[in-house]
Image 1 (tube, rainbow, N blue to C red):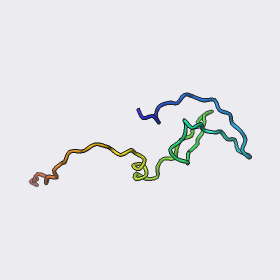
Image 2 (image 1 turned 135 degrees about the horizontal axis):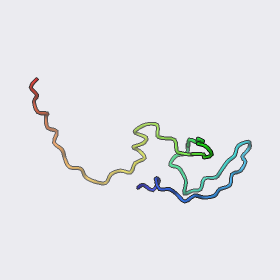
Image 3 (image 1 turned 90 degrees about the vertical axis):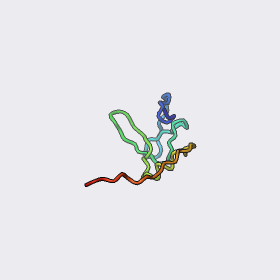
Image 4 (image 1 turned 60 degrees about the vertical axis):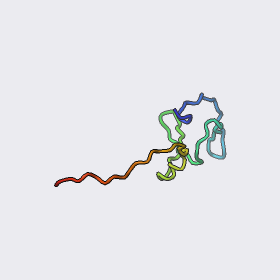
Amino acid sequence: MPERMLMKRPRHLRVFKNGRNWAVRIPREFEFPSEEVIMRKEGERLIIEPVPPKSLLALLSTLAPLDEDFPHISDLPPAPVDL
């Protein structure tokens, strides 16, 4: 299972006022791969998650490259079909 999918041990944090807003510092072990997040409330829980990539290319650029050789596949013409 990828490390980002593993549950981290809960931490008790303090909230503080920043102007008219409440704020919380996110510890390093909970950091996100981007600087934008989505926050929503479900009952008494606040859910914070990274903004999903905007395109397939953006998503693919976040993946590690594969370090393996793939076998050559001949591009044979399709078999004739009698209509």
